[in-house]
Amino acid sequence: MISENSYFNNNVKSLGYTSATGKSTLGVMEPGEYEFSTSLHETMTVIEGEMTVKLPDVSEWVTYKAGEAYQIEANKSFLVKVNTQTAYLCQYQ
Amino acid sequence: MISENSYFNNNVKSLGYTSATGKSTLGVMEPGEYEFSTSLHETMTVIEGEMTVKLPDVSEWVTYKAGEAYQIEANKSFLVKVNTQTAYLCQYQ
Image (tube, rainbow over all chains, first blue to last red; front, side, top):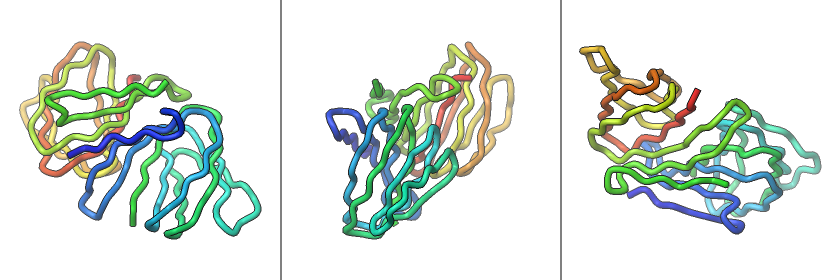
């Protein structure tokens, strides 16, 4: 089954599925600033657009463009700012 | 706005958005065989999983894995077979 998820008043939407290596979601973010929390280790890859991210325990913001990825440990929070509609892949592994 | 689309009895779902270069959708296909028709030129990129595709005016089926892409002219139909949940990016350009 392909799950449908929506967050922050429909400003972030995602589709959940299972790949050969584990659970993943494909998602799109509207322009805005968001705080996400993890329960599992996550690998976020930008597909189109770009994200400026403040990772846990880090003071500076880093911008990730299409094809670039970052990782977040389980049970952490991180901040994301996007200026254009941005598509991403999140792998829970 | 992020549009939500569903086809083939919810076996294919996608999210529509606009990137810096034009309209795109991110989607997930359940295992199965599908016939798609284009109204615009499309570039399909496999994100996770794999697709076996029979492009228009071509006799053989070709398998595309994660990171690989294929293109379809406007106003054509093509066939896709997937054996596992497969995630893709479709760029209408």
